[in-house]
Image (cartoon, rainbow, N blue to C red; front, side, top):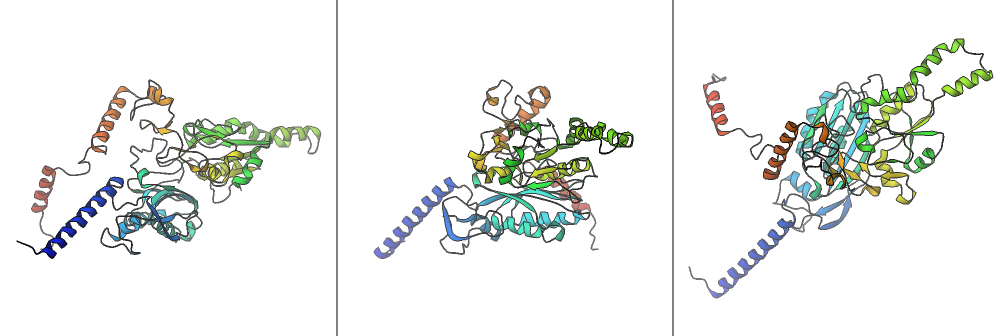
Length: 454
């Protein structure tokens, strides 16, 4: 069909505009392959999200129009995701929560609807979780949780995360350091809401942080406390965490799991002998005498100051020490993460890096990215030096787990790694999908079933 000169000029302009738009879109997609994820291009001059402990600015995606209400690109949930940066919020609360199972499905459904990922543990003693999403979505989840009066006043630790850092954290099991049951469950690809006996595994149901815990010490007052020579500073974490960083002069219990902590306390402070002294107190010298004072001084338990990653383990550990007769028990409020966030590096008594239960692996002062990577064979942190060792094989083993793994286990790990490198997911691209033969079989079986409406 022939066009007039004006029409031809209009068509050419339209084609040029379309080509330019396509070129721009392709360039932006190269920078951000998923247009329903925000880029870090520009910050809106609009408001910060209130409610979280450290509000984050809203971000605009340049693929969208400049109007205040982006339309026509994504669904409502996706538009919310587009317009904001991502945050990670870890939280916990000890509470009397016997009907915890009732919350599981409504909470899971809400997280999936809002595209909030991560992991949450519900137990008769409370809630513990780490979730990732836009500030608005995370705020809605936290509001839902705290709509139950027993869970009001969650202890929160918030940190930002870029879309580039959002990734599937493969291979989490209950047997690994980052499995649910340790500090905080974490997995980026979807949300898990689990029912457990404890929100942090300790193994002693008689310990109830809801009844009594140690005294909280703010990060700004922590240095003064642990610098006192009469204070015993105890790291409540496990060996894979303490070997990359701890507070100056802290005692390392050398535990591989938190449930080992009670036995370490009993042995370290010889509590069995102390209890025997208390039982035999009636046969001891007269109260007020020099001999009695010496016995009491010798059996007196020291002042204890404990810390962990975010504070949850110290709640139980401090409650346990108080139950064992310790009179002065303190713990760092907000844990190491809060300390590294608030205390300047020049004034800090922290040495090394802090292991965290997410893709960052470790953080330094100011919660900046650390230098450690993760061994996906054992989920322990490894340094550049560790990765130069002959025992290191990416996705298979490291110097800390090489000798504990059989050749069969290593071969399985190599197969998983090949699957991930080839398909981007362990199990291959068809993982979770039914094969055509299975689908046909299922259809035939359904056809043979009698119609219930007859």
